[in-house]
Length: 69
Image (cartoon, rainbow, N blue to C red; front, side, top):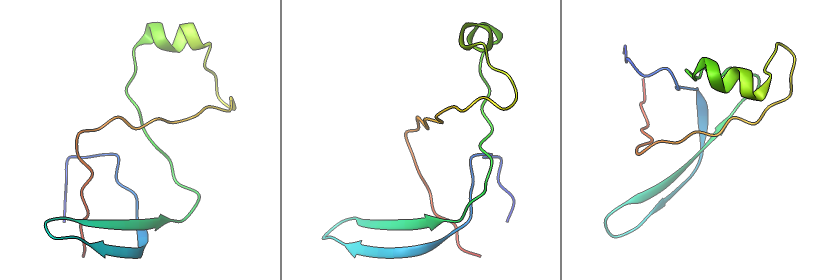
């Protein structure tokens, strides 16, 4: 399956909790993996980012989807 989304990682389903309408699915992700973020040049300069820096990746999204197969 091909998707345009780039924030996709592979993991194993750790648990499934079904409710009346929705379900909570927890996925355990194996390390290492790489997140790719498009940020402004100003942000890079403001943070003084360079290779090897320790940073925190914060994913801001309106949806998280699960694909199988």
